[in-house]
Length: 161
Image (cartoon, rainbow, N blue to C red; front, side, top):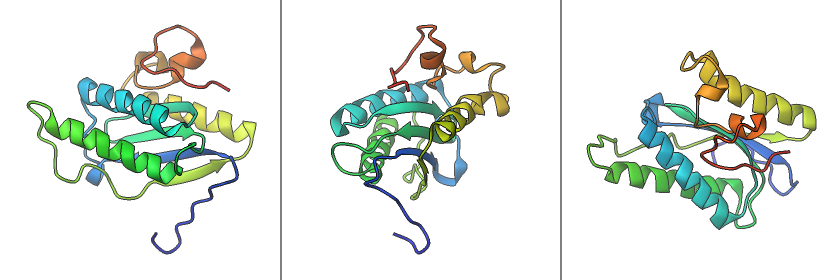
């Protein structure tokens, strides 16, 4: 691990993680690419046994709010997720996906209070609006907003708090 980067695992905190596509390229810029990411997130979640509290998939980065997995650490679960997504998208027809799909590192913030949990969920769900991709979070299906709004339109169920 690079100097100065510390991960705090084993405290049973939730983790707000952010990771980006290589060079901040919009490699998740199509609905089908974002759909692949969400599908793989569901599979890796089931395999590693972590609770998924929230997510948003943007064209060039992802935010997740998750628990520590039963199998491995958040780092190992994210490594598997990133590998699976990049392999699937590189294998897709008409895909012009670079060899290096993801930035190597990811940002990890331990969520230690209900206030921080709400702050991170609000931040995630507002991201597509702030970026002017949509006018309202309900219009961006690649997030957990609908799980909390209870409108029933969900690509992936989350473990609401």
